[in-house]
Amino acid sequence: MSRRKNKRNPDVPSPVGLGGPRVEAGPAGYGDEQYLVRQIPGARATKTYRCPGCDHEIRPGVAHLVAWPADGLGGAEDRRHWHTGCWNGRGSRSVTRRWS
Ligand SMILES: [Zn+2]
Image (cartoon, rainbow, N blue to C red):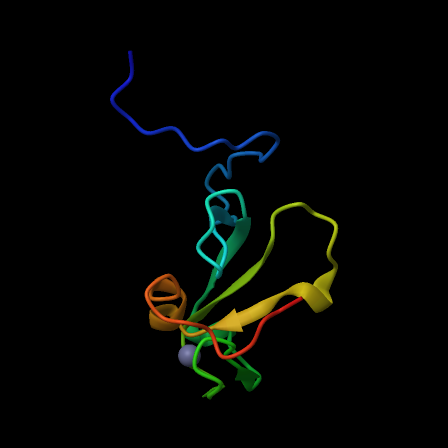
């Protein structure tokens, strides 16, 4: 009997030392909606993005993260750049845009 609350991660390969994406609940906060999340260090942030959480810009040089559906069906256009704080708080506030 495990005390850990196991998430169901059917076919997600575990990132080993590559700083690969991790699996988290999607912006809607539903447990069955999983997203892959990758951290973008400030040094790698070279463009301005629009955060869907607050609808403000993410400036170059600002560390943030990228999230996309874990079903693997989406392409690069399904990736969204979020402020780290906005992503972490996504379940406690409503997002300004629905993605679908
Ligand atoms: Zn934001």
